[in-house]
Length: 239
Image 1 (cartoon, helix red, strand yellow):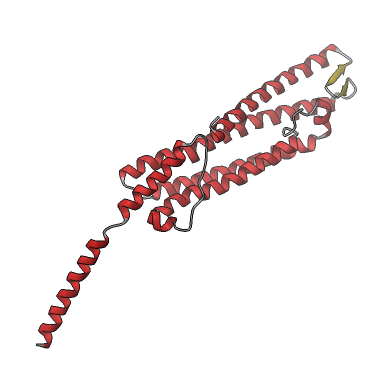
Image 2: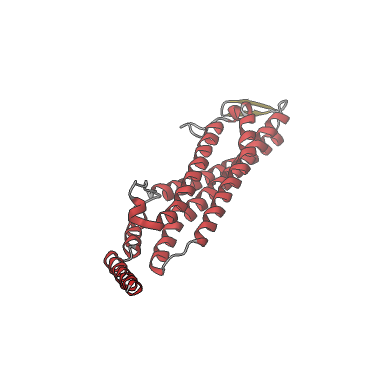
């Protein structure tokens, strides 16, 4: 009797457990649905906008909070890159309404050189962050409906911004190199040149022609940089 009673109790407990599981159901479909809606909200907004997390997100999205953490971690790294970029713009005087004159560039050659040396490190850090985000992305296991939305989301908030920033840094690198070449030319031809603000006087036609060619290269690089910076603003702000 004792053995039989235990079996009855065991079967009853198992039946109750199955009943409870059926009543509760699998939360994953609703969590995935909520997470997809969350991602689509950011996709539909113009520009790059990363929404803050809330205390109850883990309950709402379940394990998909880890999927969103990939973007949050990358976004944190990108904030550092953009802060460094702003610092470099300030070093070059490009944060001002009126750009530096040739005379000021000659005086601040050390700033130009510092920006040139620091850009490689900043770019390397950004590429490392992108590679990390891509590796984490590849490791995620997602149903097809979520994967399609997440891919669009990842492209908009990770891939496209990086592409735009890389273009800005590439054109800035060209502009910095052109600036250094021009400044070094002025410094090596002090006997033939008189530089005052935006005005340049040369004692011979050859020196003036050579400097004008360097100015053309510098100005063309500046135009490409400004175009890339406008494209980045469009990507980030959606305007």
